[in-house]
Length: 274
Image 1: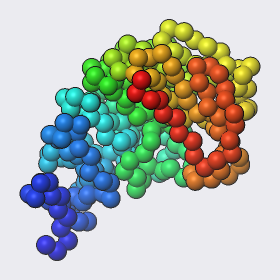
Image 2: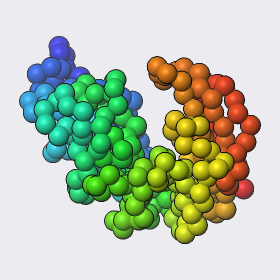
Image 3: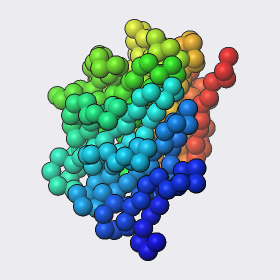
């Protein structure tokens, strides 16, 4: 059909959009729930402007300038994603973020400043963080019973929110939280008074002597073992004019211990199932 976009599931037309007239799909690949009973695609709403998710053929009511990756809980019973709108107009450097949980917004959180080159307009899925966008990407525990994300609280402070409960406040939360399978253990990295801090359950480890503030640019890929025994992240130091795909100096931070440095394009940390 001319100018139409179709999304087909199991041989049946599940959603139809009219390109550049009403609604149109993005180039985002469809995402299925772990139980294969639900699916989601990203859609640009031309009449109102903004991106939205289409879940099982039903378009979400609200539209936003940018969205985090869509998350299904492992049991397929719950959904969550971060959503951002600019504070004023479409070309400003601040975003107002919210976490959309099971289709409902959960609070408003103002980000500090959106990084250059990642303007809100024209972008569907972003890897969100609470410093720039007001909220981070959502993280479900493996049993699907707990949801965590970081959010800006105002006054230059941010915190991790777990099941609606706000945790300790820090200047920055620089990784998404990582949780054990049962959601009883959690770890993440933060910055307070220009010092890197590791939060692992109730234990706070100051890493300023191990990783001076000027020795890292950001941290990435926080991971925790299923039982919540070990926690790891990647400490990254970039150079001037860094862009995604460039070389950077990366080191593994494992249980508060810093490993060998590599000058590489990418580094990944994975734990075995045991």
